[in-house]
Image (cartoon, rainbow, N blue to C red; front, side, top):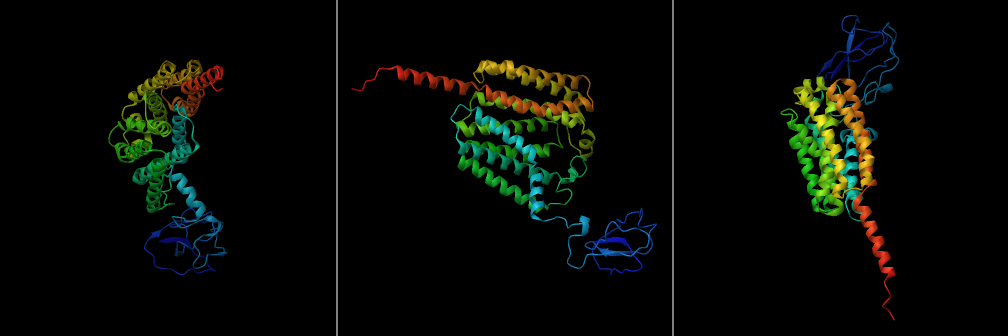
Length: 389
């Protein structure tokens, strides 16, 4: 590569042969290197002068010597930049750390809700394995979407788009994370949990990701992907799935719609520019109706939980204010859809889910019933007359 730069009377930079020329001027006070700056010379991309130099003919203070790859004051660094601290940070971004953390929390909730004794080993293996599989899915997703992410303001600074991480690093990270995660789930938990994790990985990378540019059905597939982690947690604890586990997954499935529809509403120009088929872009009326409908579904499922012996009846009373306000915000979004109502609904959805999961755990019917049964059995056994001589 070449980079055009201003020459100075008291300095000389030898022109080297490279494959590409980029015309730019980082000198402070210089507005146009091509038209207003005279005596422009070519310098290697690894030899950029200080940004603090003035465009007034003054001498050049210092230029990095041969072999230097880091330019003074961080003006330029090779891409991809392979320092250990930066690579770890890039992998963290590649895994979408906050989204992966939310996935792990929902898997933990499913594990805790299962009517079985708590085991720290399987709990840790299930949580870590779920996180690694989620990180692998997010990495593969970003690998496939680089051309489209570069057209969106929200994603144009991702590490693969900006070249901070090489595609080979991304694939290696995804393969290692997926292999380690699925192995943890299979050998450390059970085969059912590993099968659910593998299914979710395929759904997200091979179905949801390409479907985003084909049909609005991608939102339903994405919601199914979001509903599987609590099933993984439940299967990791109980070793099987029952009606109560699908009840919890139904709440997670319904929650995805107001959450994502509210997020996508303010990103319509981005999604449209990148060619993504989202409800907010192709069918705004359906986007509003779906958000309100599934928010109401969350309230109904929460109200039915005590009647299916999933939670105590206190959960019904405690979840009403939380779900009622969620429905109120969804109704405002349906009634008057703008950036304010969509942003408010999206932000509250981030609070709503952890709070609702916490209420599920605090009012877990199976745990209460088990504790009561143990207490009654223990008391009854103490009252029995001793048969020993």
